Structure formats: C-alpha cells, structure tokens
Amino acid sequence: MAYLVPSEFVTKMVDAGEAKVFMATRDTLIRAYMAGAILALAAVFAVSMTVQTGSPLVGALLFPVGFVMLYLMGFDLLTGVFVLTPLALIDKRPGVTVKGILRNWGLVFAGNFAGALTVAVMMAIVFTYGFSVEPNDVGQKIAGIGEARTLGYKDYGAAGMLTLFIRGMLCNWMVSMGVVGAMISTTVTGKVISMWMPIMLFFAMAFEHSVVNMFLFPSGLILGGNFSVMDYLIWNEIPTVLGNLVGGLAFTGLTLYTTHLRTAPKRVSYPVKADAERAYN
Image 1 (cartoon, helix red, strand yellow):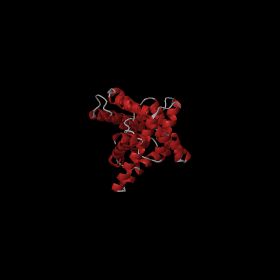
Image 2 (tube, rainbow, N blue to C red; image 1 turned 60 degrees about the vertical axis):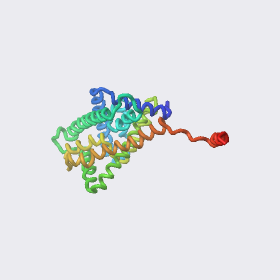
Image 3 (tube, rainbow, N blue to C red; image 1 turned 120 degrees about the vertical axis):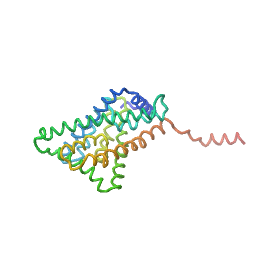
Image 4 (tube, helix red, strand yellow; image 1 turned 90 degrees about the vertical axis):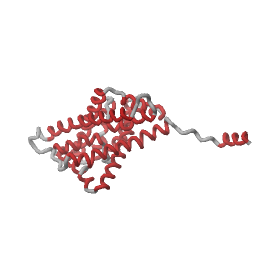
C-alpha cells in the first residue's frame, strides 16, 4: 500500500483537526449524525453475528466494517475529534481556540447521539415487530449488555468506576489508531487494513466506546433492560467519554505529534563531541 512517513501523516492529523474546528455547524452535525448511525448499525450487525454463531470473536472480526464505512465517507466520531482537534491548538494554528474545540466536541457529541438513537429506535421496532411481541434473541442480548455494563460496574463502586474509566482509555487508544490508520495510506485497500486491526481489537476486548454505547444503552432501555437513564449516564456514558478523551489524546495524538512532528534535538555523536572538546581546549 502507498505509505506516508510518520511526519507526513501526523501533519495530516493536525490539518484535519484544524479543518474540523472551522467546519460549518450544519456539516459538523450531518457528518456526526451519519457516523453515529453507521456505527450503531455495525454494532447491531456484530451482536447479531455473535448471537447466531455463539462466538464473540466473529462479531469482533466483522464490527470494523462500520468504522471503515463511516471514515471512508468522511464522517466524524467524537472519539476521533478528541484526538485531532487539540493537536491544531497545540500546533498554534491561527484562530484555533479552546472555545472552538469545545464547540466542535459538543456538536459532534449531539450529532453522534442523535444518529445512534435513531438506529436504536428503528432496530427496536425491527426486534419486536413494532413493539407487538417480546424482543428477539438479538434484542434480548442488547438489553442484557446494557444491564451488565451499567449495574455491573455500579456493584463495585469506586473500583467499578475506575475500571470503566480505564476501559474507556484503552478503547480510544485503539480507536484513534484506526483514525490515524485512515491517514497512513493513500489507497482504499491500505486504509481499510490499517483501520480494521485496532477496531477489531477494541471490540474483541469489550472496551468502552462512547459512541457505540450511545446506541447500546438507549436501545437496551427501549427493549426493557433493567437499568435507568441515570445508571446509563453515571455508570457508563460520562466516565466512558472522559476515558476516551484521555486515552486517545495521551496515547495516540500527543505521542505521535511529539515524537514525529516536534522531535527533540538529536544527541551529539561521540566524534563530533570529541572534536568540539579539542577545539575548546
């Protein structure tokens, strides 16, 4: 695949972050809405394959198809803008401010949530034949996920909250590698391969992704999951968002930017250093 060297794709990351900060409100919302909806459909697909085959690994192998589709279409996830937009501020791009970044994050959050919620309602209708029967096996599985990944953390109190936050960090460490993967190659095949691997890993490891959860938990509530909206917000969505922010920015955005675009001065080699000392003496 056509491969960009690290300094080139990190520059693309900063350029992309700057472009997203200045994007029109309409376009930001549309792209975020579509990203949330497509990722939600991919989650339905992965859970369906898991239920039909009895193998979670099959679901993990297939889930990245949604991520690949939405990024090839140029749509935006909250987890992606968490990584890209701060780099434009750190790089001191003209006009990029904290207020502009927070505005972008707020719009992308709202768009992702609206898209995921739309799919949650539509799939709940499909799972229940228009709410005329009990949810099918896939619907019951999704409702169970909602309970396990809210009340399950709540049962462990502070330790559960810490675990949830760390899972959010680990998740966006991997997901943001997928975002970067889309920039590493200039061919569609190369982009797909680069994105597929880290996304498969995060899904297989059941890490916490704030946008996937925007579908799973509202869907679980609609389908009769035994947890509340506050359980969802406090014991999943809010800590997951914070974990995604810290993990993606710290482990992917800042590390790549620091070591490939703002590299430290090279160490002086021994012969050069010896020559300098002789000249001084």
